[in-house]
Image (cartoon, rainbow, N blue to C red; front, side, top):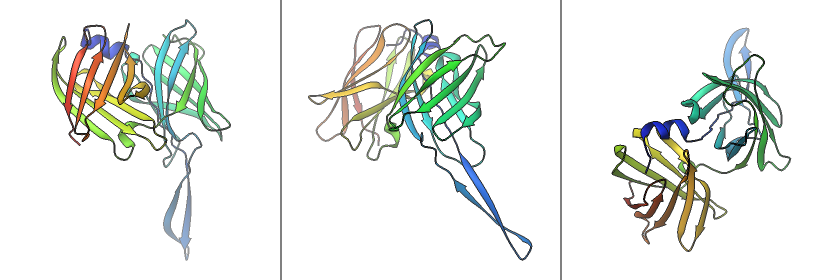
Length: 254
């Protein structure tokens, strides 16, 4: 279980972003103003990306970026839990054919992310720098992410939820699991009472019917070992963290 609510909020490493790219075109009839035709322009990096940031001091930080096409100016919204940031707006300075550059500035975290899409479209990677004059807690680093869909948006996703009591008091644990077209499993965890929302599980694997995935808090990772019932109406298994393993038996809610 989590040692304390503050530890969860301050040290789960996560990173989620949204990119929007668009163009618009006007038309008129007989000199009057006609309807504005808006075209949403996709960016090659549209999708959900998961991997890690490696800071120059060696720290490894789990991260995920959601890239979407939208209307108007390109926008990025970044979730970075060490900074207490959830979908915080960033400033986009470039959205090229294969690149995205944006700045995240929140408190002691002030960094520019330079992302490049691989030629085969399977990887989003790049570097993190500090703007001149900034005193960012994360000085610089690199990141490497793979395209992995979010469980919530996979057709047929299964949601399981149950109220629980632990060292931090009462809370509701919700786990979403889904199997994508290529057979891989994806999953994410919600604990609203701890400000943990839509946290993807990393390194998800399946073996002999057991789905395993994890996310890292300060210290040992939180590891989930999950088994679906035959009728897929219950999710059972173990949640391993810094304390003793917690038995899970959760009903399906949708």
